[in-house]
View 1 (cartoon, rainbow, N blue to C red):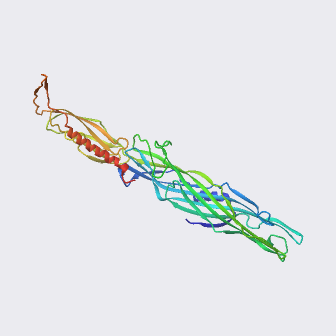
View 2 (cartoon, helix red, strand yellow):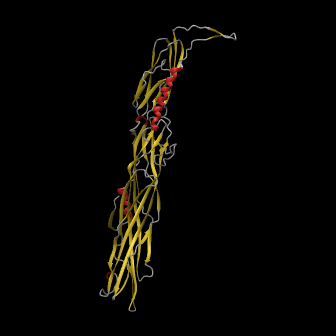
View 3 (spheres, rainbow, N blue to C red):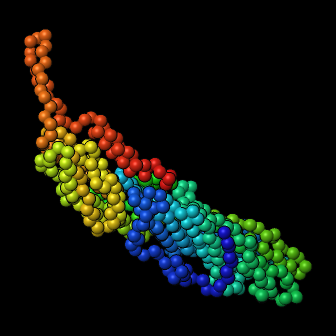
Amino acid sequence: MKTRFLWKKYFLAASALALGVAVFPSAARAEVVAVDCDVDPDWCKTAPIAFSHSDTLPIEWSFDTGWVPANSPLQVHLWAGVYATTRVSLKGALETSWPEALLLRAPGAPEGGLLSYHYGVELGAQAQLHVKIAGIPYDWVGDIPYIPQIDFQVEGEQVFDAWGWKPGATLASKTTPQTIIEVGLSDIISIPSVLVDGGLKVDVQMELAATYTTERIVVENAEGKSVAGGDITEEGGETKAEYLNGPSIDLDVHPEGHIDYDGIIHLIPGMWVEILGQNFAFDLVDIPISFPITETQWSFPKQRVHVPLPDVVLPKTEIDFGEIEVGQKSLESFSLWNAGEARAKVTIVSSSPELFPAWDPSLDIEPGVTADTAVRFMPRKNGPFEATLFIASNDPNDPVQEIVLKGVGFGGPVAPSQDISQESGCACRAAGGDAPTPASGGLALAALAGVAAFVRRVRKGGRG
């Protein structure tokens, strides 16, 4: 943290406002396009987001000490007003992942927060003297001659880890005492200088603190409605957005929080007088004046994030090979179109790989590209056969799609039939089974389960 002290003439609230607008502009709404995450880039996109907000309005606070110390022949009257400009900057990311469409996280950047302030004080002062020397009263009340408005300022800044969740980030500082008034009494009291000696001195010291706390990160869809999972309200928290279909999704995100102001102004006046050899004085005293605790709610400007997504489209949901001679092979092609804006990663698994093997076990399809692939039918015996071709991908809306496969084998050897006599006298015919064996289907489903497990690991992977 760094602290500076500035002394200027004619400090006005309007200049503080102008300074805040010129130096600390609010972040404008802009679109950021998400890119691949470092971990699992085909199932995760991340976009840098940054926010800045300044409060340039004066704190509605002032004080008046009245005449102090009470019942003293020598008194001062001090008053002041306080102004503040506070700025908070935050940096982090919006991370979108799936297949649980769509999981949203907002990790804050280490040292991605900046809290800074610029405080100023306007002061006014009077003094009065009421004494009687040798029966002669000496009375005087008047302004202490100094620059009418004095600007006593303190600036500081503090870096912290975004987002500044509870208990928040605090910036606190204390100035060294600064003399703002120092005059000789002969300059302000109309008494012959040979009879009067003395002076007046006033020091001021400030203790200042500002604490920023993020309460929530609001995520909305393009229509301005909160996402289904609500706001993110804690460090490491997450939410969810509904996603029906399409090549991308637009999200608006912004933090909301509050600033607490607190502090003390120390006024340290002192005065001494010597008249005709008689001394009247009081020592320097510390008059602490506390700020009332002020809480201000902050809502940062929205940041639009565009998240490219894969969108795998199947042109058909059924392939019928018709009749194929046993021992022969038939190849049927089909296409996969990636209508999205992000690369599609596709795995193709057949429920009956011995009868209907996939031509390409896996494919990477770039945005806007149509990939051609195929599936075979290789009947080993007569009869109708049916299976399912599973198209597993990183499409957040349709992670697993299906194509029904049909075909009939003919021309193969016919298994002889036989009668089985039972004790009951019933004769039953047992035919050779034409359905796929359970073993091949089980292996295919195990492979598909492996694909699903690979897809789901994105939630438990290295992103923490």
